[in-house]
Image (cartoon, rainbow, N blue to C red):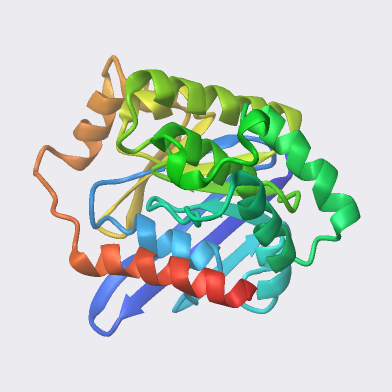
Length: 267
């Protein structure tokens, strides 16, 4: 099967700190891929490299057959991204948020108008298209962010903790929408989560990173079999240990900076 993402012997060093060290993995086109790891394991740094916001110190990354370093613009047009923290303009309507995103990507009105309607209907928000986003619930905002990330017909959708803080019913609905989009749009989904049952339920493939290195990859069933566990959370703990990890402030700041850089790049 064709590979939509290829990461080969990639490292990222910040001085003496080895945030990511010689990782390799690939993602098949049209699959749902979970990238898991404890706090501070290297997930954020890897995502920033995949999305052109941070150059690797060593190695090669290709997305949709484009080298992310030498062809950043083509790479950016190949993916959509939903950040962990909200990034919508709450003083705009749902439709205006979508329209603004279309302008940033230079999508023609003749293309984006029917596309906006299609996507808002797909996530059950068309009837709220003229409502201000500040009136939306957390789940509605998440659905709008997902729709917005798909506006320019990306090949890959990156989701960083897409259901963080949502109640179980809303989380279930969000994943129903994502799986529907995966099938309808033939979309590759790359996501991170700390809800292991989500990855167990929806991921076709999983890679686990810890201390900057890929420690295991496989289907959820393969990882459970390899660790002789009954669920992916137990498999994850067996592979990464039970020690509590603290997320560094630099990792949090890094994703905020990445989001700001991403918006600036599109402007």
